[in-house]
Image (tube, rainbow, N blue to C red; front, top):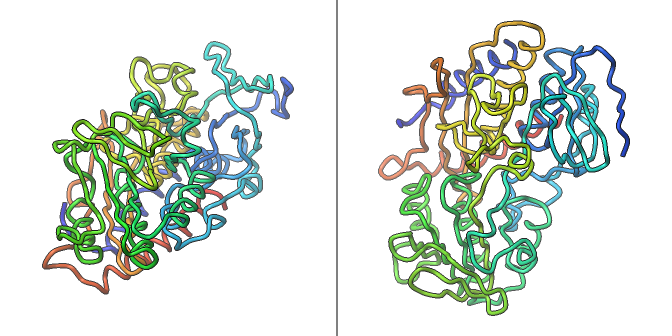
Length: 433
């Protein structure tokens, strides 16, 4: 990809997304004979879809089913871990969606009756739908690491779902002695937020440099390369001595034994292919798959993810059910919050068209991933995507990457931090406002 002019990119991206967007009881207050959409999952994708369907057609009844009263965004949670943001700033409720006429039900979905078009919940509810939008997020594949299960996350957090896990990892860093070692075990592809583990290492390194400068970070990685690697390592070299004998960060890749195969919580030890690694704080991020309900409902088939038709996000396995966000197979789009937001708008426009016997609009999609290395240094990658009639494709020349190397500009890097924070404020308002 080439470098991009941000103003031009935002103009293209904004017009594309706007075109896509505009083109315990068994009974609920759903009008008989009305068009009903049930959205499962109140994260970025689900909340966006619910809101935009109502905005596009207020005659459609939209019910959002989400077990939690609040949602914590994974994006910007690394700033909480690094001590540069308060946990309350990434917490969002659903009053904004209710104001748009979305019915919010705090319950847990247990299955789908595809023949009767019913969503089943733990409370015993059966919610009828004409179209269902599933946004189940991801589940952790604990069984890929010997000795790791959900109970162990109370000692060794993954912090890959924001909220209590975020606070736990932050508390462990604060309690660690100066001179301690933090081990981050990165997951294999594909996983939510490809640059996330490396931004996390950067944020933790900034905290340690300023508070516990004798400490080290060890990144154990089954992969041999990662998203925005050149820009990250350049930033690590500038700020944390990467590549020198005094580097605060060490990255061990898959060719050199970086794949973590086991964990012993009692001794705080990670077992690699060649060596064992002891640490004072361990952040073990396991392999991932589509959220559990997707597997239960039969939306993944024999795989870990949900195959979809990219211009509507309708499942290829269950008709009238759409899957958006991290759980869907939407390559080449990454599994990111911005992707989920963009996919939700495309899906919403398609659902409204299908329920009104209209033609599904030609979609456009966008993604930008910001990564903050220090409070004054951030990087980003951006891309606009289109639909070629068969699959989602990246639009040639439409994206870009923050300049590095000889083209590095410190003032631009500082602006990237401001852009990242502005993006966060704008997208969370777009989702939950």
